[in-house]
Length: 193
Image (cartoon, rainbow, N blue to C red; front, top):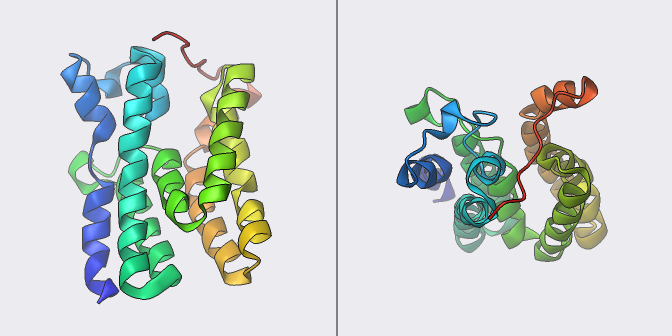
């Protein structure tokens, strides 16, 4: 049955949270800041409050998809449907396959599948982003260490590999950020309300 849920998980992932929040504030998020339709760019352009809203909405997409999989056919289906939601967020068909970077949606997947790891990494993300003023630095760090956290908590090789696969997709979406960080041209995140 969970196979039938794959397109539903993809559709859940395509829900354009950042674009709707930005549009409600009279902004096309693709034309301001970094141009990325995600929580970090919303924060940069519209402040932390709206950035948190987008983070929660995007995380809810991953959590819903992973939760559906978990309920229908256990943890393997949770990982698969969660990964498909991340793919939908990153490559939404309705936006010419140009979506966000998957950090929040992927976070939502792990909020369901590894909540202690998720909670610890959210706290770490906020600390790093505050210290560096770069959301991308915080995102790259937590994405890199998430599979390690899953391994420590779950101690299950296939789950580590599954989480590494999701993280690899999110990390690939940050290659541009890594290049800008190397040349010191990366965007700073706003600290406004």
